[in-house]
Length: 267
Image 1: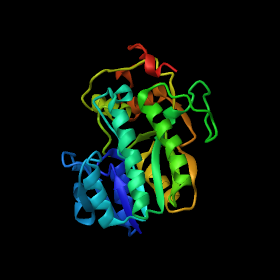
Image 2 (image 1 turned 120 degrees about the vertical axis):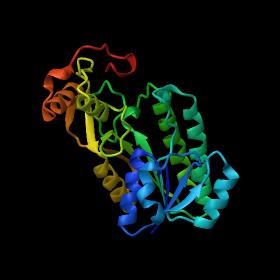
Image 3 (image 1 turned 90 degrees about the horizontal axis):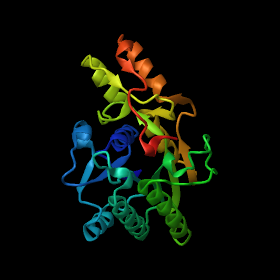
């Protein structure tokens, strides 16, 4: 199968690309020229690499005319330095995603897998199914909800089958060291005190390789609509931090309650 992946140099995207290569797919990766490709360095010889920012509509369209992918897994989205949740760059990601979908429809792409987020849901509910109401409280999540809404309308007038995967929390190899699990591990390895909130936030974590497998399983199926991708097993931030402390033999370095909650994650 000929597959186009956007965001292939990112955390999840790199694992998806690696899996699809192993599955024998012809993998085309659309990446920005400025992208750091350390996560995909080992698989570059097996990738068909196309360099362009998605905002370069004419260039992207020319590439798509040559590739003519059967399937697109769209993982590319703005990622900033901790401020991406309410960055206006999310609006740019929204716009280029709409353009990409339209261009793919024109070249005969049969299936589009868009990547959403658990933050689309109303977190006051505590438990989510694919039919749970959405209530985004960040520009990032609102942009995702808006994108899905419009893509669903566009898909009705094209022959492109649309699937939307709402990813929950991820962890695993090659994750940004500023994220929860790698940041705690790195601090413990340096014998540094790990200061956290009370750690009562309930999250759903799934290993990134399992997420990649789930994305591929859905992508190659005939499943359409919204699909949640998570473990279904609730765990608190405090439990994660304490478990890491115990595994590394340094539980005394975990200081729960040393930091206040940030307003955006106080649910």
